[in-house]
Each structure stands twice: as C-alpha cells, then as structure tokens.
Amino acid sequence: VDPDSAAASEKLKTIPEKKAPNHSCGPFLDAITMFMETKNLPFQHADVWVPSFLPRDSNGPSKAVDTEQLRLFHAGYATRGDLKDNVADSFHEFGAYSDNFSFEPGHGLPGRVY
Image (cartoon, rainbow, N blue to C red; front, side, top):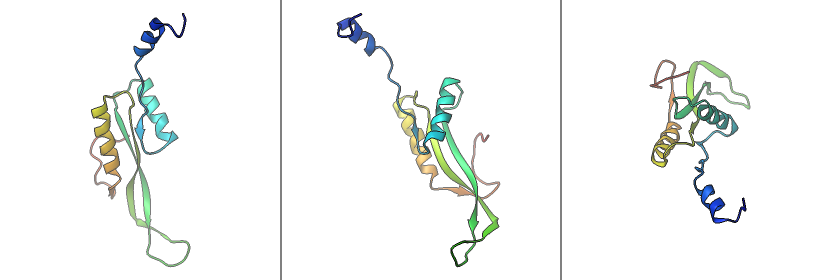
C-alpha cells in the first residue's frame, strides 16, 4: 500500500491515539501505569504514600530523627492514559491536591491501600 494514498491516510486516522499518562513521579509511576493498562486492572489512578520520620529540632549538619513523629507523605501519583479527558483531568487534580497532606499513623487515606 502506498503510504501517501488516501486509503492509507484514512486508515491511520482510525488508530486511536494513546495519551501520555498523567503523573508526578517519573519512571516508577510510568511502570505502574503501564501495568494497570496492560493487565486491564480495575484501577484508574494510583497515589504513592511513603512513611518518613520528621527530624528533631536540633542544630548541626545532621539532625536526629524523632521516631515518635512518623508520618505518611504523598510521593506522587499516576493516572491511566486511556481515560476520557475529563476523568483524567479530575484524577490529575486529585493527585496534585494530595501533595498538600501528610498523615500520622492510623489517620487519613480513605480507600484501598496496598
């Protein structure tokens, strides 16, 4: 088939264009998004939360860690690239808004957590 022909051009238009996933955490979340899509998992969005200890108030270049102040911090998010624009935009806003929060153990994070 001649790639310049009208038929070839029309055939290319029917191939759905895949959008890039929405995320804020680089290759790690690219892999999660690709896994959700290729395995057709029932998840549309993933948030990553990591535990971290807050530093104690102290002077000097290295600060001691206060083991009493463990918190979960938002580390990034990913939204599938095969969603409708309005749904993907809503998940993107949710993921970006999650950066405003951290939680003490046993508090927050409604929904499924794996």
